[in-house]
Image 1 (cartoon, one colour):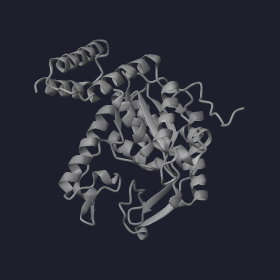
Image 2 (cartoon, rainbow, N blue to C red):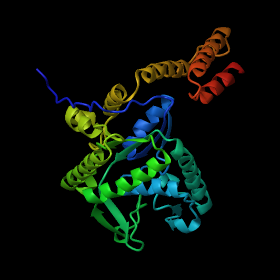
Image 3 (cartoon, one colour):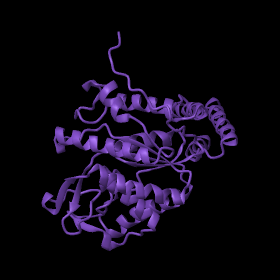
Image 4 (cartoon, rainbow, N blue to C red):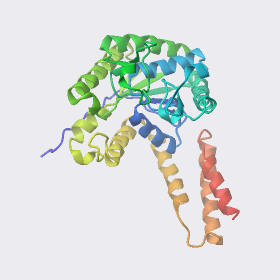
Length: 329
Protein backbone atom coordinates (compact mmCIF):
# COMPACT_ATOMS: atom_id res chain seq x y z
CA UNK A 1 0.00 0.00 0.00
CA UNK A 2 1.35 3.45 -0.96
CA UNK A 3 0.91 6.11 1.72
CA UNK A 4 2.10 9.15 -0.20
CA UNK A 5 1.78 10.76 -3.62
CA UNK A 6 4.99 10.49 -5.60
CA UNK A 7 5.88 13.44 -7.82
CA UNK A 8 7.15 12.28 -11.19
CA UNK A 9 10.19 14.30 -12.20
CA UNK A 10 10.41 15.57 -15.79
CA UNK A 11 12.49 13.31 -18.00
CA UNK A 12 14.11 16.20 -19.87
CA UNK A 13 15.78 17.90 -16.90
CA UNK A 14 19.33 19.11 -17.67
CA UNK A 15 22.32 17.45 -16.00
CA UNK A 16 24.63 19.91 -14.28
CA UNK A 17 28.36 19.21 -14.01
CA UNK A 18 31.10 20.76 -11.88
CA UNK A 19 32.69 22.50 -14.85
CA UNK A 20 29.46 24.42 -15.54
CA UNK A 21 29.01 27.99 -14.37
CA UNK A 22 25.77 28.62 -12.47
CA UNK A 23 23.83 31.66 -11.33
CA UNK A 24 21.03 31.14 -8.80
CA UNK A 25 18.55 33.91 -8.02
CA UNK A 26 15.25 34.22 -6.23
CA UNK A 27 13.74 33.32 -2.90
CA UNK A 28 15.50 31.90 0.14
CA UNK A 29 14.86 28.44 -1.30
CA UNK A 30 17.32 29.38 -4.07
CA UNK A 31 19.81 30.30 -1.36
CA UNK A 32 19.34 26.91 0.35
CA UNK A 33 20.07 24.98 -2.85
CA UNK A 34 22.82 27.41 -3.91
CA UNK A 35 24.70 27.07 -0.63
CA UNK A 36 24.62 23.29 -0.96
CA UNK A 37 25.90 23.46 -4.53
CA UNK A 38 28.69 25.77 -3.39
CA UNK A 39 29.66 23.40 -0.58
CA UNK A 40 29.72 20.61 -3.17
CA UNK A 41 32.31 22.67 -5.13
CA UNK A 42 30.06 23.72 -8.00
CA UNK A 43 31.02 27.04 -9.58
CA UNK A 44 28.01 29.15 -8.69
CA UNK A 45 27.04 32.67 -7.75
CA UNK A 46 24.06 32.81 -5.39
CA UNK A 47 21.64 35.73 -5.06
CA UNK A 48 23.97 38.66 -5.89
CA UNK A 49 21.08 41.03 -5.00
CA UNK A 50 20.13 39.04 -1.95
CA UNK A 51 16.81 37.22 -1.68
CA UNK A 52 14.24 38.41 -4.24
CA UNK A 53 10.72 37.04 -4.37
CA UNK A 54 8.87 38.30 -7.41
CA UNK A 55 9.76 37.55 -11.06
CA UNK A 56 10.03 41.16 -12.23
CA UNK A 57 12.51 42.20 -9.54
CA UNK A 58 14.69 39.22 -10.48
CA UNK A 59 14.37 40.17 -14.14
CA UNK A 60 15.30 43.80 -13.43
CA UNK A 61 18.39 42.71 -11.47
CA UNK A 62 19.61 40.66 -14.44
CA UNK A 63 18.84 43.50 -16.84
CA UNK A 64 20.88 45.90 -14.71
CA UNK A 65 23.87 43.58 -14.93
CA UNK A 66 23.45 43.26 -18.70
CA UNK A 67 23.20 47.03 -19.08
CA UNK A 68 26.35 47.73 -17.04
CA UNK A 69 24.50 49.47 -14.21
CA UNK A 70 26.67 51.03 -11.50
CA UNK A 71 24.84 52.11 -8.36
CA UNK A 72 25.33 55.64 -7.01
CA UNK A 73 24.17 57.35 -3.84
CA UNK A 74 21.13 58.67 -5.73
CA UNK A 75 19.92 55.05 -6.07
CA UNK A 76 19.78 54.65 -2.28
CA UNK A 77 17.63 56.11 0.48
CA UNK A 78 18.06 56.45 4.23
CA UNK A 79 15.53 54.94 6.62
CA UNK A 80 15.85 54.31 10.37
CA UNK A 81 19.60 54.92 10.39
CA UNK A 82 20.49 52.70 7.44
CA UNK A 83 21.00 53.26 3.73
CA UNK A 84 18.98 50.92 1.53
CA UNK A 85 18.66 49.97 -2.10
CA UNK A 86 15.03 49.34 -3.10
CA UNK A 87 16.28 46.60 -5.45
CA UNK A 88 18.33 44.73 -2.84
CA UNK A 89 17.73 42.62 0.24
CA UNK A 90 18.41 44.13 3.66
CA UNK A 91 21.72 42.24 3.82
CA UNK A 92 23.11 45.04 1.60
CA UNK A 93 21.89 47.88 3.82
CA UNK A 94 24.57 49.79 5.74
CA UNK A 95 25.16 52.72 8.09
CA UNK A 96 26.81 54.79 5.33
CA UNK A 97 25.96 55.04 1.62
CA UNK A 98 29.60 54.30 0.77
CA UNK A 99 29.50 50.98 2.60
CA UNK A 100 26.17 50.00 0.99
CA UNK A 101 27.44 50.92 -2.49
CA UNK A 102 30.63 48.92 -2.01
CA UNK A 103 28.61 45.79 -1.26
CA UNK A 104 26.03 46.39 -4.00
CA UNK A 105 28.49 47.19 -6.78
CA UNK A 106 30.96 44.49 -5.74
CA UNK A 107 28.36 41.76 -6.15
CA UNK A 108 27.01 43.38 -9.32
CA UNK A 109 30.51 43.27 -10.83
CA UNK A 110 30.69 39.52 -10.08
CA UNK A 111 27.35 38.97 -11.76
CA UNK A 112 28.22 41.06 -14.81
CA UNK A 113 31.48 39.15 -15.33
CA UNK A 114 29.69 35.81 -15.03
CA UNK A 115 26.86 36.35 -17.53
CA UNK A 116 28.86 35.83 -20.78
CA UNK A 117 30.26 32.55 -19.38
CA UNK A 118 27.00 31.35 -17.88
CA UNK A 119 25.80 27.79 -18.58
CA UNK A 120 22.78 27.60 -16.27
CA UNK A 121 20.51 30.23 -14.76
CA UNK A 122 18.46 28.79 -11.90
CA UNK A 123 15.51 30.94 -10.84
CA UNK A 124 13.22 30.36 -7.87
CA UNK A 125 10.11 32.51 -7.95
CA UNK A 126 8.40 33.06 -4.61
CA UNK A 127 5.41 35.31 -5.21
CA UNK A 128 3.49 37.04 -7.99
CA UNK A 129 2.51 39.83 -5.59
CA UNK A 130 4.58 42.98 -6.04
CA UNK A 131 4.93 46.37 -4.37
CA UNK A 132 5.19 49.42 -6.62
CA UNK A 133 6.75 52.60 -5.26
CA UNK A 134 3.97 55.20 -5.47
CA UNK A 135 6.48 57.97 -6.31
CA UNK A 136 8.52 56.23 -8.99
CA UNK A 137 6.06 53.57 -10.18
CA UNK A 138 8.88 51.00 -10.01
CA UNK A 139 8.47 47.54 -8.53
CA UNK A 140 10.78 47.22 -5.53
CA UNK A 141 12.74 44.14 -4.56
CA UNK A 142 12.40 44.94 -0.86
CA UNK A 143 10.27 47.42 1.09
CA UNK A 144 12.79 47.68 3.98
CA UNK A 145 9.92 48.15 6.47
CA UNK A 146 8.76 51.44 4.97
CA UNK A 147 5.08 52.17 5.73
CA UNK A 148 2.60 50.44 3.40
CA UNK A 149 1.24 53.80 2.24
CA UNK A 150 4.45 54.26 0.22
CA UNK A 151 3.51 51.33 -2.05
CA UNK A 152 0.79 50.01 -4.31
CA UNK A 153 0.37 46.24 -3.96
CA UNK A 154 -0.84 44.21 -6.93
CA UNK A 155 -0.57 40.74 -8.43
CA UNK A 156 1.32 40.26 -11.68
CA UNK A 157 -0.52 38.63 -14.57
CA UNK A 158 0.64 35.54 -16.41
CA UNK A 159 0.98 37.52 -19.64
CA UNK A 160 2.97 40.28 -17.91
CA UNK A 161 5.52 37.80 -16.58
CA UNK A 162 5.65 35.81 -19.80
CA UNK A 163 6.28 38.83 -22.03
CA UNK A 164 8.94 40.23 -19.72
CA UNK A 165 10.84 36.94 -19.53
CA UNK A 166 10.55 36.27 -23.24
CA UNK A 167 12.46 39.50 -23.83
CA UNK A 168 14.91 38.77 -20.99
CA UNK A 169 15.76 35.24 -22.11
CA UNK A 170 16.32 36.41 -25.69
CA UNK A 171 18.70 39.11 -24.39
CA UNK A 172 20.56 36.58 -22.22
CA UNK A 173 20.93 34.12 -25.08
CA UNK A 174 22.45 36.88 -27.23
CA UNK A 175 25.21 37.06 -24.59
CA UNK A 176 25.37 33.32 -23.82
CA UNK A 177 23.81 31.33 -26.71
CA UNK A 178 24.00 27.93 -24.97
CA UNK A 179 22.35 29.17 -21.78
CA UNK A 180 19.73 26.94 -20.16
CA UNK A 181 17.25 28.20 -17.56
CA UNK A 182 15.96 25.99 -14.76
CA UNK A 183 12.88 27.30 -12.95
CA UNK A 184 11.52 26.35 -9.56
CA UNK A 185 8.65 27.79 -7.53
CA UNK A 186 9.34 28.24 -3.84
CA UNK A 187 7.33 25.88 -1.60
CA UNK A 188 7.33 28.56 1.11
CA UNK A 189 3.81 29.94 1.56
CA UNK A 190 3.43 33.71 1.82
CA UNK A 191 0.77 33.68 4.50
CA UNK A 192 0.92 37.46 4.95
CA UNK A 193 -0.80 37.61 1.57
CA UNK A 194 -3.53 35.30 2.88
CA UNK A 195 -3.76 31.62 2.00
CA UNK A 196 -6.14 32.17 -0.93
CA UNK A 197 -4.03 34.99 -2.38
CA UNK A 198 -0.95 32.81 -1.90
CA UNK A 199 -2.59 30.06 -3.98
CA UNK A 200 -3.49 32.54 -6.72
CA UNK A 201 0.08 33.82 -6.64
CA UNK A 202 1.70 30.38 -6.93
CA UNK A 203 -0.73 29.42 -9.71
CA UNK A 204 0.22 32.55 -11.64
CA UNK A 205 3.90 31.66 -11.38
CA UNK A 206 3.33 28.08 -12.50
CA UNK A 207 1.23 29.15 -15.49
CA UNK A 208 3.86 31.72 -16.53
CA UNK A 209 6.63 29.10 -16.40
CA UNK A 210 4.51 26.71 -18.45
CA UNK A 211 3.92 29.40 -21.08
CA UNK A 212 7.64 30.18 -21.24
CA UNK A 213 8.50 26.50 -21.66
CA UNK A 214 6.29 26.46 -24.75
CA UNK A 215 8.20 29.43 -26.18
CA UNK A 216 11.67 28.05 -25.35
CA UNK A 217 11.27 24.24 -25.32
CA UNK A 218 14.99 23.52 -25.74
CA UNK A 219 16.28 26.06 -23.22
CA UNK A 220 13.77 26.14 -20.33
CA UNK A 221 13.15 23.49 -17.70
CA UNK A 222 11.10 23.14 -14.51
CA UNK A 223 12.10 21.29 -11.35
CA UNK A 224 9.00 20.59 -9.19
CA UNK A 225 10.30 21.57 -5.73
CA UNK A 226 6.92 23.14 -4.96
CA UNK A 227 5.04 19.94 -5.75
CA UNK A 228 7.50 17.72 -3.90
CA UNK A 229 7.04 19.62 -0.64
CA UNK A 230 3.28 20.05 -0.97
CA UNK A 231 2.45 16.54 -2.24
CA UNK A 232 5.19 14.09 -1.30
CA UNK A 233 5.83 15.77 2.07
CA UNK A 234 2.21 16.60 2.84
CA UNK A 235 2.63 16.76 6.60
CA UNK A 236 3.43 19.57 9.06
CA UNK A 237 6.26 17.50 10.55
CA UNK A 238 8.21 18.52 7.43
CA UNK A 239 7.88 22.21 8.28
CA UNK A 240 9.81 24.52 10.59
CA UNK A 241 8.11 25.76 13.80
CA UNK A 242 6.59 28.71 11.87
CA UNK A 243 4.59 26.13 9.84
CA UNK A 244 5.53 28.02 6.66
CA UNK A 245 9.17 27.22 5.83
CA UNK A 246 10.24 23.66 4.99
CA UNK A 247 12.21 21.95 7.76
CA UNK A 248 15.83 20.93 7.34
CA UNK A 249 14.65 17.38 6.69
CA UNK A 250 12.37 18.62 3.89
CA UNK A 251 15.17 20.65 2.31
CA UNK A 252 17.45 17.59 2.54
CA UNK A 253 14.81 15.52 0.75
CA UNK A 254 14.33 18.06 -2.06
CA UNK A 255 18.11 18.32 -2.38
CA UNK A 256 18.37 14.54 -2.79
CA UNK A 257 15.68 14.58 -5.49
CA UNK A 258 17.46 17.46 -7.20
CA UNK A 259 20.82 15.67 -7.16
CA UNK A 260 19.37 12.44 -8.54
CA UNK A 261 17.63 14.20 -11.43
CA UNK A 262 19.72 17.29 -12.23
CA UNK A 263 23.36 16.29 -11.70
CA UNK A 264 25.62 14.09 -13.82
CA UNK A 265 26.72 10.76 -12.34
CA UNK A 266 30.32 11.98 -12.36
CA UNK A 267 29.40 15.09 -10.39
CA UNK A 268 27.58 12.99 -7.80
CA UNK A 269 30.78 10.94 -7.36
CA UNK A 270 32.88 14.11 -7.06
CA UNK A 271 30.43 15.44 -4.47
CA UNK A 272 30.96 12.28 -2.44
CA UNK A 273 34.73 12.76 -2.45
CA UNK A 274 34.36 16.44 -1.49
CA UNK A 275 32.09 15.42 1.37
CA UNK A 276 34.72 12.96 2.63
CA UNK A 277 37.32 15.75 2.66
CA UNK A 278 34.92 18.05 4.48
CA UNK A 279 34.16 15.43 7.15
CA UNK A 280 37.87 14.64 7.58
CA UNK A 281 38.61 18.32 8.27
CA UNK A 282 35.80 18.43 10.84
CA UNK A 283 37.54 15.63 12.77
CA UNK A 284 38.81 16.89 16.14
CA UNK A 285 42.06 15.11 17.06
CA UNK A 286 42.95 14.17 20.63
CA UNK A 287 46.50 15.44 20.00
CA UNK A 288 46.61 18.03 17.18
CA UNK A 289 50.41 18.32 17.53
CA UNK A 290 51.04 14.61 17.03
CA UNK A 291 52.85 13.15 14.02
CA UNK A 292 49.86 10.88 13.40
CA UNK A 293 47.55 13.88 12.96
CA UNK A 294 50.05 15.65 10.71
CA UNK A 295 50.21 12.53 8.55
CA UNK A 296 46.39 12.53 8.49
CA UNK A 297 46.37 16.14 7.22
CA UNK A 298 49.00 15.36 4.59
CA UNK A 299 46.78 12.57 3.29
CA UNK A 300 43.90 15.07 2.97
CA UNK A 301 46.15 17.44 1.00
CA UNK A 302 47.23 14.56 -1.22
CA UNK A 303 43.59 13.64 -1.89
CA UNK A 304 42.76 17.28 -2.71
CA UNK A 305 45.70 17.53 -5.10
CA UNK A 306 44.64 14.35 -6.91
CA UNK A 307 41.13 15.73 -7.32
CA UNK A 308 42.52 19.06 -8.54
CA UNK A 309 44.66 17.28 -11.14
CA UNK A 310 41.60 15.53 -12.52
CA UNK A 311 39.18 18.46 -12.06
CA UNK A 312 41.24 21.70 -12.14
CA UNK A 313 38.13 23.88 -11.87
CA UNK A 314 37.39 22.68 -8.31
CA UNK A 315 38.20 25.29 -5.66
CA UNK A 316 39.82 23.85 -2.53
CA UNK A 317 41.67 27.00 -1.51
CA UNK A 318 39.95 27.21 1.87
CA UNK A 319 40.61 23.55 2.69
CA UNK A 320 44.27 23.76 1.65
CA UNK A 321 44.72 26.84 3.84
CA UNK A 322 43.10 25.03 6.79
CA UNK A 323 45.51 22.12 6.39
CA UNK A 324 48.49 24.47 6.06
CA UNK A 325 47.61 26.31 9.29
CA UNK A 326 47.13 23.07 11.24
CA UNK A 327 50.34 21.53 9.91
CA UNK A 328 52.35 24.60 10.97
CA UNK A 329 51.03 24.70 14.52
